[in-house]
Image (cartoon, rainbow, N blue to C red; front, top):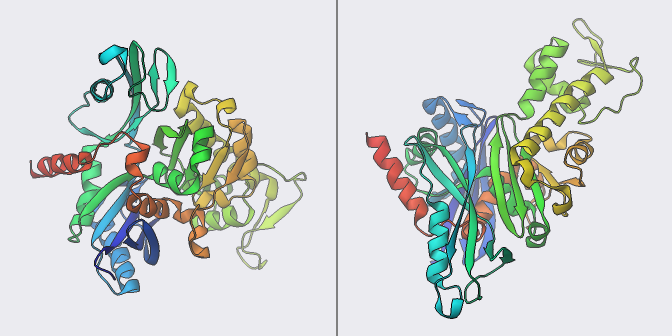
Length: 404
């Protein structure tokens, strides 16, 4: 390792698994050099509900990652998800005060600060400020400085979360004597690694369906306009099958993997599939159509909730790069078709836009891979209005809150 390189880790504390990727950076170059994984404990719908259990599982994944490279991690980039994440939009405008009616740096700072100046309840804290494009007298501009006009406006989408929940995640890492360098929303991490700048400019929606939650990020004009989390994921398909077929969770997971579909393709109710396939004692058969109907209904519901969450901002005509799907549930057969029907635009299963080993190209690793890449390439600042040092302020606030 050179004097300018460092060993860093990206950590995703998910509902079904804890994943740690290890990267070595030198300047702008990223090398994924190791990983660790451990079944998740104490996490429900992306939220830590049992800190000791979640902490032990996370530490095991970190130890495995460090052992895979034979070195200690020096800093951590941590993903953030969970049903407590929410957001709102706030817009502000100022009269242009620059010389000769040209927008000044002071005007830009003023309008941006006004757009971000929206108080949160004491138990909430901001995770990201997602700045939308600037407008001068109602016309969109990429960079407003020195442009002549009368009125400068900008909107900011505030992504915020429960302070206690965020503190729990950070403290899990810090209890392992590791500094958390960045906290990144899971949907933005996936969006960063799965889409190109051109796609983000033309409009693209990224939907990451995990086990307990679904993260999403909607990009327009090259920027994330909305990002968030819904508390529904792949485990809900498994639970629906378990209840509908009256089988165990483990059996339902197997049926989902082998026979589930995001759209119904079966035509004949006499087409049946076996639970174990050995035709032995306890083995049972079920209509393939019933299995597909159960999984298709829940998949459609997930997409409908995401579209409703984005609201009137979403428009198929503005989403010219389509929908990008990822997460473990993205492997469900027919999922592109199901997404296309709900979002009324082409959909595809995403692939990382960087060179990585084949095992990391699985959608299960999109968040943690994007997290590592985004953190090391400094693209968090490019995708939000978050100024340098904001996260340090959040960390100080969380530290102070934890001492109360």
